[in-house]
Amino acid sequence: MSLNLDFSFQRDSFSLQVATQIKTEGVTGIYGPSGCGKTTLLKCIAGLEPVSQGEILFNQQPWTKNKRSLPIEKRSIGFVFQEASLFPHLNIQQNLDYGLSRSRKKAQQFKFDDVVSLLGIGELLHRETAFLSGGEKQRVAIARAILSQPQLLLMDEPMASLDQKSKSEILPCLKKLHKALNLPVIYVSHSAEEIARLADELIIMQKGRVKAHDSLVQLLSDISSPLSEQDQCFVVLDCVVSQINKNFHLASLAFDNQQLKIPMSDFKAGQKVRVSIHAKDVSLCLSPPQDSSILNILPVTIVAMQPDNAGQVLVRLQAGQQFLLARISEYSCQQMSLTDGLNLYAQIKAIALVS
Image (tube, rainbow, N blue to C red; front, side, top):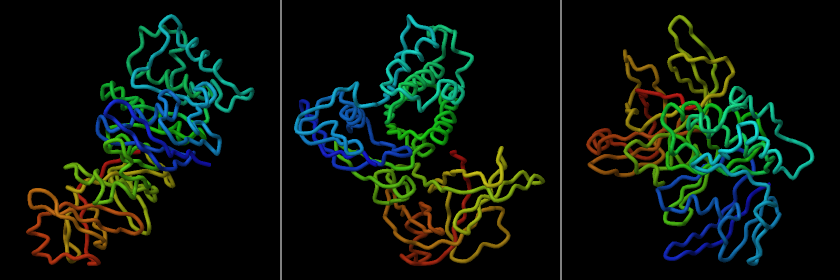
């Protein structure tokens, strides 16, 4: 089951050429700078922009082929835009009822009460749209799109216009939706941190082309990807809570026979969590450090190195089956005689929980 894209789009001086296959499960993030074609790609998938040539197949059903295009209303797509675009003359209940009315399915896969509960909008149902915050409006817009019973949900930077408080309210809701609903999502954002919290797969776009497409974990740690060029480049590790030490307020996270410790949050043993580690927060040692205050010291192997700007080197490290990045000075790299395949130790100064 997949969304097969092999098409081109041309408008004035901008061209979009895409040839890739997206899994119709989980969340696929689309990342890139403004103007690279992220929104245009979504609109072509939805049928809002005409494809110049090529085809779009959703689970083998042709949505666009040989310049024939399936009407938008028959594509079973939910679309969430940057702006909530709620109907101002309808209250929240009526806006959601409109979503239900757009469903072409007799059976409801996504139940009204379940979606309302997951997005935490039960108390808003009888309110008018004018009295909602930006975050509340966007949660209603997401609920309305899901209640139309789509087979695919497209989200175009749904948090771009929201303040940090609203974003912090919506992100956990999106994570709950991802876990509770069997609904594939294509999520566009220019924020790598935002995508890192949600995505399973990642597509990186540049100048109307797919620069890279792989798992999120793989691409974040790829030193040849555009993401590695950022000053704040980071990786994510998928872990499981293995132990909680209430005396010291620490949680132990396990991955591939490795252990990390982070300040305890509201965790439960066995819970899956995702953490992010910035390259600037990783230092390297040739031998196990002694009497260090740093809690997280992992045995790692150098798998690749790449000179960075301003006399620095970006080092890709394998830890179990996952990867870290470390940004160190070129001087330190030469002093330590670092080479591919060398076994050493990574000290991790800071770890952030991202999911």
